[in-house]
Image (cartoon, rainbow, N blue to C red):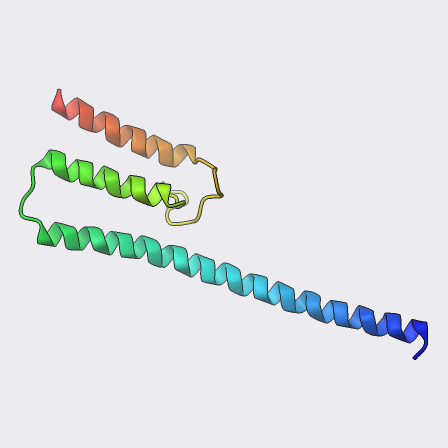
Length: 114
């Protein structure tokens, strides 16, 4: 096989691999999106089960449990804000909308105690 034919064959193989990698990347993004949605759904279902199992707790304990749940979701790397709820945050990246929700939740709880 002459060098030009070899180069042509190599180019064809590279194009095929590029299409395969692009397809795998799209599949991986879909799997990650579904995984995120399922994690958030599981967390919400766990919270509902906890509410059903628990006898009527004081409002302060409920708000603390809600804050803890939101904090756990956020610390796990997912958005809790209404703009990006359930989508994955980049590693080490904070979201000002999510942090605002957590701050308001904490500040609201402190005001109701005083």
